[in-house]
Image (cartoon, rainbow, N blue to C red; front, side):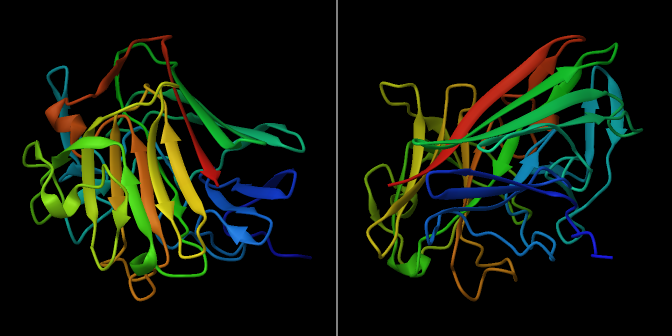
Length: 304
């Protein structure tokens, strides 16, 4: 009897030479490639995602200081899942089994009813839909409050863009953002600042040995209402992530302190988010999701 992969059932979708695979556990984007070119840094079906690869980050992206927050006058404690920094990292859904609502040749939709817990007693029904087309991979995520009280909510995503056959050192980076979020030694925000020269990627420039684990706000959008993060590899091809106006924050990480990727510098975490770290405590860009209300975001990945 074949063993079940640690991330559960694998849902593959295809379109004109492009292939993407989404996992049952966590609804992770496990792989996305066009012909023989990886668009994201994936992971094997028989392994766990080494660095939140392709994760759906709900009901909060990034970190909550000490796992503690106050909502409508009540104090809550969620599990501290990043012990070294004493934070609750990347929400509650990454290790849950999602259910396939639909699976066709070029699309898959997974859903989960996130149950209330002592630290987050707000039941949510969440769907994430992946669609491959001639323009790339588009992802739409909707969260609906199925409880009786207002819920704090944020959402983000964790693809690692591939620079192709070379390393990040040889890549050119461009980001549509005008402000930077300084952090303390726990990677928790300490304010908002102008872009320092070494982190200003509004115009494309070589990434070189720049080490990143930084959030950016003040997103700018093109005439189509999209904000972009572009990574051009040494092969001349550009892997890119876009987000629409339903999100306004970016996180970029080169993984220099992440054991699974640090030695190779073979991927850039390119994370569109509705809010930055610690939003459950600061309230910055945090969504108040009322009973019966829904919140939808859309983003995508392309290869040119």
